[in-house]
Image 1 (cartoon, rainbow, N blue to C red):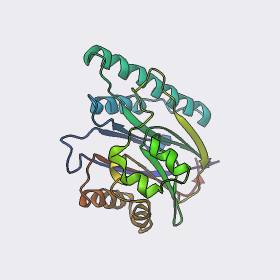
Image 2 (image 1 turned 90 degrees about the horizontal axis):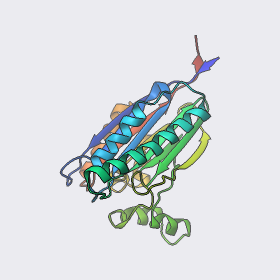
Image 3 (image 1 turned 120 degrees about the horizontal axis):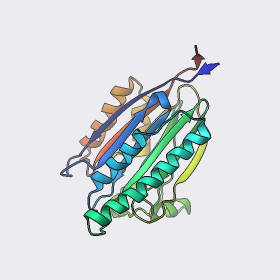
Image 4 (image 1 turned 45 degrees about the vertical axis):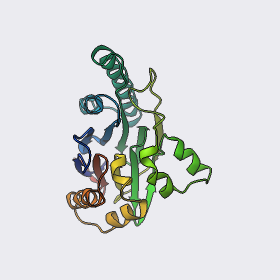
Length: 247
């Protein structure tokens, strides 16, 4: 049999303007699970919402085949949606609190992305950067119709309103996408605080430059901070190694 190895590195920062950090992340490389959650800006207790999601995902039992594990992640996020809404009803008099989420689950040659909102998953293969997830916001619809470029949509980020998020509605609707993975693939999960400052070409150039994942994560975070980091910034990297013989 063969076993697929992964390495991970992550960084998070409040940014240059926000008083505190509402992002949270989970990296469980040995289990093939990574996640970024971004507390909804302008809403109450976004930091608590993202922590609740991270704690729930971090406690997941990963001992299951890929389809069952993906179902567990899905069920856990739906459970977090209910818990966040119940907490907001009890502690915030029903005011909205929530977070966006993007998760990567990987086993062998298969990866699965689950997401709600505008936190993103990218894949770098060779020198090609692909955006795997698609934002749940009105500007994304304009991009798909060719009325805006992706760069123009990202530049309008502060005016955007996400149309899906954990805690925003009684029922959570996640998008789920399966794709192949290959040795050497580098995945970037991030909150919008990163790509609002660094466009796709800049992200690609920084990632292609290579180095350790720790150095790459530092480089990405520093790039956003140098641009003024108007929002919280979270960077989570996962790189697939070569398959080797398992014991």
